[in-house]
Image 1 (cartoon, rainbow, N blue to C red):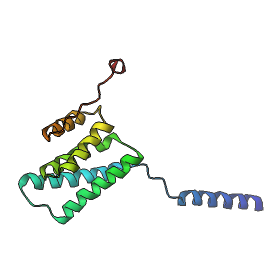
Image 2: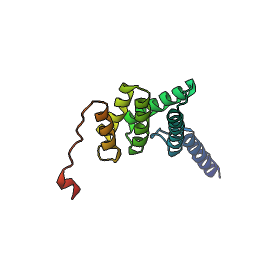
Image 3: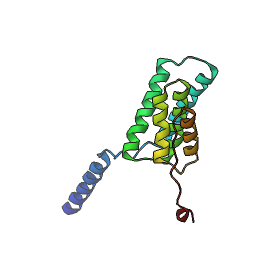
Image 4: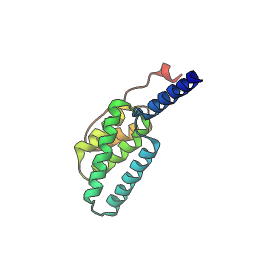
Length: 142
């Protein structure tokens, strides 16, 4: 009986120790991406309506960009592409060209096969920066 109790205690201690370990961050969750997208869309609406951005809006944009950049270093994820594109458009509208260029180049360099890569290249071209998208290998498409 003692052996069973010791075995059960060992099992429960092991399970609780395993559950208490912090889980490794594997990137931005779907929920976090949704919140980021909503924040970017709200700022975009303000810009298109001619409203001024509050310090909170600016801080939110900076926070989103930093989080995306940090996660791109760890785990590049194609789901970040629309957010980078939207941020690029916001920065472009605000005449923050260096930040816009960074966003667009991130798309082209990391996600050249997405639908937003040609749009990012076009936006860069409109800003006076010529970018050539990588050519797809015909054998890869077949």
